[in-house]
Amino acid sequence: MKNTDVRIPMSARRLLFWGLFGLICSALISFLIANNYSTWIAFAVFLALSLVLFVVLFALQNALYQRPLTALASKVGTLSSGQARDIPDEFAKIEQSISLVAENLNARSREVSELAERLQSIFDATEEAIIAIRAPNELFAANTAAYRLFELPRATAPTVESFFFKAPPIIGLIEKCLKEGYAFLEQFSMLKEKKEVILTARAKRFRVVDSDGVVIVINDVTSLKKMELLKKNFVANVSHELRTPVQIVKGYAELLDGAEIDEECHSWAKVIGHQAARMERIVADLLMLAKLEHDPASWIVKETFFLKSVLAEAVRTVGLQYADSGAIELDCPEELQVYANPGLIEQATFNLMANAVQHSGSHEKILVGVAQEENDIVVRVRDFGSGIPPKDLAHIFERFYRADRARSSASGDGVLRAPSSGGSGLGLAIVKHIALAHGGTVRAESWAGEGSLFEFRFPNVTEDAGVADQPADQTSTPPASS
Image 1: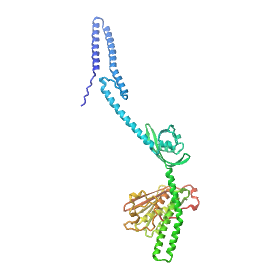
Image 2: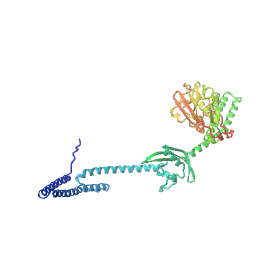
Image 3: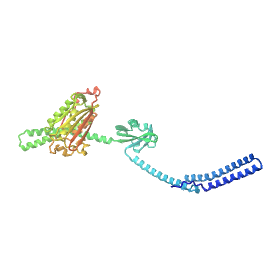
Image 4: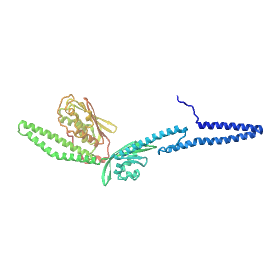
């Protein structure tokens, strides 16, 4: 156990001794006066002597503790300069503790300074523009990339409005983030050096002392967008230029196949015709994809129609094009009406069913179901093939992406089969862009050895009447094999 006895310093004990001695002397003097004179005079003398004794003891006590405390304060004040002062023994342990605390504080201060320098170096070296805002209108911090992006000198201390003068959408982003905790701007543009730059921004709320703050990260995606546009234009142009020569090759292959030539030449002509037809489908899909990616709202015509009749036509087309397909079961309410582009909805459903036929056995059934969930129409296509490997599931809606060859060429019972259509690898990408063009989404689930489920979802919301009154010649192309 710790020793809790209170030890009185030597100087304090001396003061206590002399204080008691002075009181005893004052009492004796008062007693003698009381015997020789009167009691009142003795009492007055005793009070006077006691008061003098109290004043003297108080002055000595003050001197006893004030000088060491003053020296100790001076010691603490000069720790950083390395100077040393003599401290009385009574306060030596306190001085040692304070010195130890001061050393720890100095070490922590150095660590914090080094960490702050490292963080500032990382902060300024980051290519993304990073800005921290303290609510409601204080620019808390910004890195070099942010000042460079908005063409502002580092020496200035601008307000939020002046900092984002060239990018007003950021002000709305900050307000939304302060309310919801997180906000994202998918794309916006501004002028920099008289050129348009395309940016994305995301914001996150954080706490600064007793107020809220927002940290904003802005990325310049101008180069990526230009490269993406260049790639799309290149694909569209090449596809357009290939259409005519492919059709010519296909036509001559058909002529050769009908000519009086030997059987071997007939087989060659059929191979040429088959590959030309496959190339023609790829070109058609590329043109469709390019058209969907380039401002679909400007040419897609929506109308109200009965969904089951459109899906039934897609089922019929799949049955004609894939002679060895299994039974396709369609479950859709008869009176369900939707507001969309019927040709594109038929194209998307056809592509999903064609994909299911290609990747399931010839005797495996395919289920097509339709449901209305609040304001959304959901079309689900379920096959019972071999399933999609997990590593491929996240990429199947990308253009030209082909899943594992085992899925593409094996039936549900493990028997290899050649797909009758020769997929282009673009069918599911077209489905994705049709969904996006309608403000919807696509997703897929898969189970090894049990098949896959594809979900095509789009909102069933009627737009202004003017949208449906656009010219009828802008309708989409009919379903094509993918």
